[in-house]
Image (tube, rainbow, N blue to C red; front, side, top):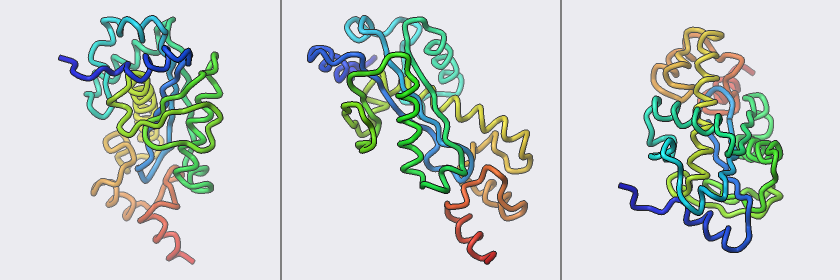
Length: 215
C-alpha cells in the first residue's frame, strides 16, 4: 500500500499556478562505458489532482523496479497521449571532454529543451542544476518521492539499458548486456584483457590511469 504521496510536490506547485511541471532524472553517471541518458516527463494536471491511472500503479524509482516492471512502465508512459516526454543522450566522448557532471546536466537541459511544451517548473532528482534555465526544485532521492521524477528515471534507465544491450553486440567480450557498463569484476577483467572500447570513458578510473601509463 502506498504510504507516501508522490504527487505532493507537483500538487503544491499546481496550487501556486506553476504548471506544466516536468520531472527530470538521469541514468548512467557511474558506469565506465556508454552514454549518460536523461529524460524529462510532464504528467497531465488531471493525474496530479486525481492520481495515476491504474496501468501506472506501482510506478517508482527505476532502481527499485524489476526489468519487466520497468519495461511495462516505459511502454505505458511513452504510448500515452496524455504524457509529454523527451529523452536525451550524451555519449562517452562528450563525457570525457566536459566531465560527467556537466554531461549529465547537458543531457537534462537537452531533454527539457526537446519537450513540446516548456515547463513552468522542474523537479530535479538530486542537487540543483545551475545551468537549467527553468525554475527548479532539487529533490534528494526524488525518484522515490515524485511520480514525475520516477517516470523520468524509468525512461532514462530503460533507454540506456537497451543501448548497452545493442553495444554488447557491437563490442563483444565486455559483457555490456549484463553489467550495462558498470565496473563489475567481470567488466574490469574484460578491460584488462581487451583494452578499452570506443564507448569506454577514458577519463574514468581505472581507465584514466591506464591511459596515462601509455604516454
